[in-house]
Amino acid sequence: MLAEIPALDKTATTAIQQRIDLKTKPAGALGKLEALALQLALIQNKSPLSLNKPVLLIFAGDHGINVHGVSIAPSAVTQQMVRNFLTGGAAANCFCRSNGIELAVIDAGILSALPDAPGLIQQSLGSGTADFSQRPAMTLAQVDAGLALGRHIARQHILAGCDLLLLGEMGIANTSSAAALLAAATGLPVETCVGRGTGISDTQFELKLSLIKQALERPYAKDPVSILAEFGGFELVQLCGAILGAAALQTPVLIDGFIVSVAALLACQIAPNCRDYLIFAHQGAEAGHKAVLDALNAIPLLDLALRLGEGTGAALAVPLLRAAISFYNDMASFADAGVTQVVDSSD
Ligand SMILES: Cc1cc2ncn([C@H]3O[C@H](COP(=O)(O)O)[C@@H](O)[C@H]3O)c2cc1C
Ligand SMILES: O=C(O)c1cccnc1
Image (cartoon, rainbow, N blue to C red; front, side, top):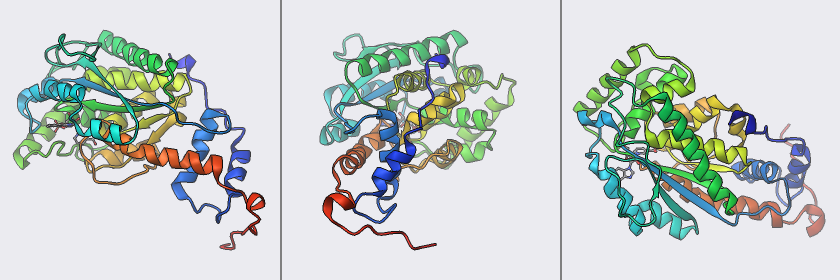
């Protein structure tokens, strides 16, 4: 899988930057949209740039650690929300509709399978993970299978025309898993990585913190695949696989909140070349989100104090990608418009 991810060819950087700088505006005046246009132009390597078929994949999985009550919700809510996605009633559905994004939902390993749910993509790795505070969440074979399944579904959508992959997740207690993964993958203090997720009480928060600390104290191998097996989730490994699969096909990936950002961190540890294909939609309110973005050297587009996941932040950022493409393709240059070129005189 690693050998397949090409490094992004950056030889056109100067030419692309010049095209941006010659547009009728002071240099740099479109801020983060300029960096976004540059990244998309490098990835697409064509003119005009296009965004025809953004697709949000929501991976769902359950977490054994929720036997301790580390979320405001019981694990049954994961599958209830899966049905909600399929019938169009969740926040992610609303933002996909308002922004012209296709949505597909994947059972990556929820507690009980939903064979009767039309449209649900069945790629379950099991009935939820084991309780990672006591033992590894899954086997290395499940990690390998999950990476391959995530890669497969991303490839399938990209080969069918998806030109921007948005990633989201649903999994009650998955902020516990993501926090443990972040601490294990970076060595950051657990306190920096653990947050309140769905909005748990002080008592639940203390329990969540102590369970995660306890888990991180047992010996484990520090490579990203072993870390995923120890503390991961079935949706998290498939998210990693999807990122690797999209990067292998040189397709940009729009990363959502804390959980998807942690999957991105692990994917980049597995295959550093995939970093260049990632766009970070937002920085949310979950405590560890800033830490994971910093570890990835990522500058997020939005800051809306979101703490929902599902891909909501990614869906909300799509209009900004369209705007970046639009100015890059269509904005007049100084020469086109007969405007005197302004030169930055700040230094
Ligand atoms: C009704 C409901 C809808 C959601 N949609 C996303 N999440 C979010 O909350 C969960 C993570 O937070 P924690 O670790 O505290 O459980 C994930 O399912 C995430 O997608 C939801 C949570 C709930 C309760
Ligand atoms: O940022 C996220 O992805 C997030 C935060 C809280 C709860 N669920 C998801």
